[in-house]
Image 1 (spheres, rainbow, N blue to C red):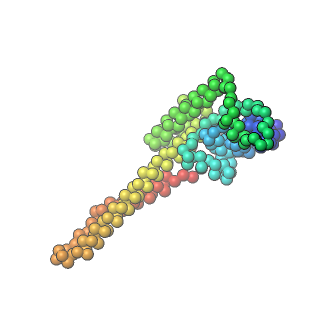
Image 2: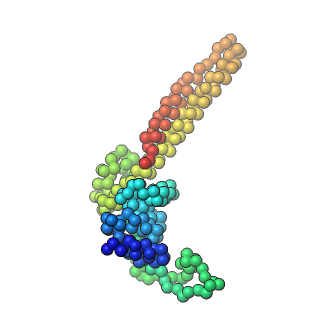
Image 3: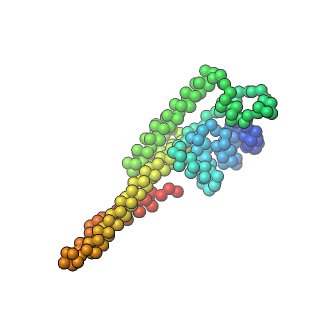
Length: 246
C-alpha cells in the first residue's frame, strides 16, 4: 500500500496519466500519503476545475502547503470553481514517429483522430452533468451566503441537496470567496466615491475662499460634501478590510 504514492509519481512523470490517476487515487485514501497524492493528482487530472478540487484537498490536509496555496490562488483568480475529478481517458496508441517528424505529446493528442466509443460519450455526458450540477450548487451557496447565512448552515443545505460533506465544504469555501470578492468590489467603489467627494468639497471650499474678495470677504464651506465623503471613505475601508480573504 505504501508504494502507491511512489508508483503513481513515477507513472505521472512517465506521462501515463491513467495509471498515475489510479495509483494516486489509492494513495490519497492513505493518511500518510494523502497530501502528496492529492498534490500529484492535480498534475494528472484533465482540467482546471478538477485541479482546484485536488489542491483544495491538499490544503484541507495541510493549510500551509505553499505549492497548493499558489496553485489554488491562481485558479480562483481565473474564476475557476472545483469539480470532482473523473477517470482520465486512455491515450490511443500511436506508432513511433521518425526523429525528423517527431511531435510533442500535446500535439499528437490534439491532432491525431480519435474514434469516440459510446462508453466514452456517456462518460463525457456524465462529466458535463456533474459540472452543471456543481455549478448550480455553487450559485445556490453564493446566494445563501449573500443572505448572511452561516457557512455551516449552507453546508447542511448542500448536503440535503445531494452533495457529499466534503464537496459541500469545498463549494462553500469557493462561494465565500466569490461573495467576499463581490463585497470588496462594492466597498472599493465606496472608497473611491468617498475620496472623490472629499476632494470636490475641499476644492470648492478653497476656490470659494480664493475669490472671497469679490464677494466682500464671504466664502462658502462645502462641509456637507466633505462630511459625506469622509463617512463613505471610512465605511468603505472598514468593509474592504473586513471582507479580506485568508
